[in-house]
Image (cartoon, rainbow over all chains, first blue to last red; front, side):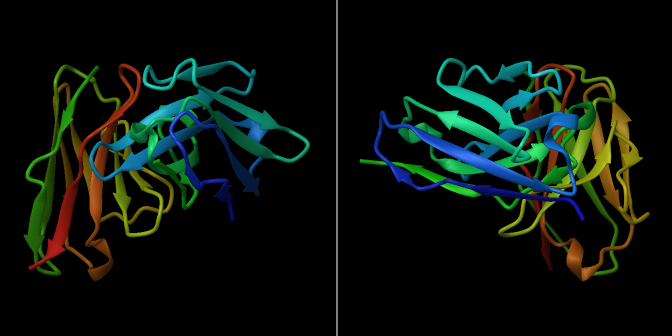
Length: 116
Length: 106
């Protein structure tokens, strides 16, 4: 059974940085298109970034230049490095597989709270 | 950005009834539309993709239809486990989601 387990979410001050991890089992991260999606009560679900098998990455306008998606093939883990965090980045962050640009496997999410 | 509008925000039904949920796009997304179900504390679950194709393992009571700007998710006979929040998502132009429709027990 495919499992995606996110970690790394916590309280961080505005302007701070944070790295989220997504450890995969029964799924090889490097063989798949992988993505991060975030969810807030106010804005709902928002696609954040995608990483192709080739290593090419794309980002939502709202995070481009501040967030970086990457992977460690030896650890079968996807990452989201976040910097310049603001209160609007407060959300539950999910990693998901994204074949055909639909999300078919999701984790349970990790909560990032940006607050002073 | 393509805006997806799901209305109403909440629908109330009894188990066994037929439910129809709506998703309208601000411009054509062709058939590049998916539906997801989300329960508390869980990530969304893919139900339907490309407007009408059921994802692996999804029961036949779930069906999708539509093209262009108007889409429908139908649950033919509601089971107790179907009461949840449903989201639509388009992939025609970047990726955006609707705000969701909560399906609650009447």
